[in-house]
Every structure is written in structure tokens, then in C-alpha cells.
Image 1 (cartoon, helix red, strand yellow):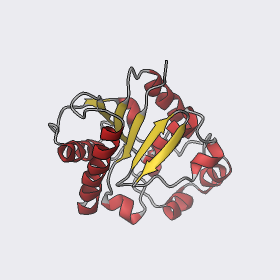
Image 2 (cartoon, one colour):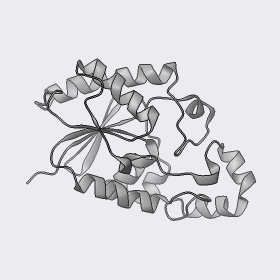
Image 3 (spheres, helix red, strand yellow):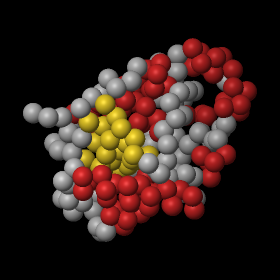
Image 4 (cartoon, one colour):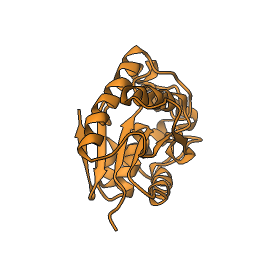
Amino acid sequence: MPKPVVYYVRHGQTEWNAAGRFQGSQDIPLNDIGKSQAIRSGELLADILTNDSHDPRRIPFVSSPLGRARNTMELLRGALGVPPHGYQIDDRLREIGYGHWEGSTLMQMEQSHPDVFAERQIDKWGVPPPGGESYASVTLRMRDWYDSLLQDTVAVSHGGSMRALLVALDVETPVGAADLTIEQGVVYVFADGQVTKHS
């Protein structure tokens, strides 16, 4: 039985993304660039789904509960010509929690908790931010989410969640995934143990 294909979209840009601030569980809205990226993702997805013989009205869509992901999903679905709200929410797709570091830049993180910051530089996967969650634990929930899929699915989620999914599906190692840039306004297709970026 073939494994489900995941059409993965990271939410569009927010002002915190632009400023290099880590969002985690904070609900920061899309900016104008982010809205354009969401629509662009939908346009790309239209071609990808057509090539894969998927009807956008029949394939499942699922989003992180955070507003920036839901807004991206609704704009993306609009670009596909399907009703904006016809998707599910799954809490497992939420972003990695950055705890006390949410809203901070890397420099501010280092200043506020230098010891933890130094530990994370050595083991970004295993060491959680203060009051936050580790990539290792996010990997477990992303694996749990993937294992629950019954068919090919479109997902809108986050950069950190995608790094965890790459490791959960053995596409990347923790060391390789930890510093990967996950782009906005593109579509990543997880299929046959690999990921392909469409831009």
C-alpha cells in the first residue's frame, strides 16, 4: 500500500518573520507579502494537483490551528477555486513552542538565557527553549499526524513543524534538518521517501 503524499505549505510571511522574531505559539497575522505568498502557493498547487490527477474538491486539506496558517489555507483554497473554509484543523500541526523566547530574535535569546542557548547550539534537536518544546518532541507529534493520514493530503503548517516532519519520515537527519530554510510561497511534496520543492 503506497504511503500518503503530503502537499506541504508553510504559512506566508508575517511581520515577525520579516524581523527575525521567533513566533512559536504566538498568533501573528500575515502581512501583505505573506498574503501574496499564500495565493502563489495555491496557484502552484493547482498545477501540481492536476498533474497528480487530484481534484481540489475531493482531496483533504488540513491546517495548523494558528491564525497565520489558517489565513494561508483560506487564501490558498481561494486560488484553487474551492470554498475557503472547507478544511480541517489539527493541533499536531502547530509550530514548535519557543516558550520564553517567543517574540525574540536570536541575539535576544542568547542574551536572556546564554547557557540554554549554548546547549541548543550543540544539540538543537534535543534541547528545548526555556519553557518550550524540543524538536525531538515535535518530531513525535508530526510522525503521529502522518501515521493518521488515510490518503494524499494538503497541509498548511510551519517551518519548525516541517523540519520535524523531514526527520519523522527519514528524509533528513536531525543535524541536517535543524538549520534548513523552509521557504514561504512554495509547495513541498513529500512522496516516496523524498521531498520536492515547487516554486
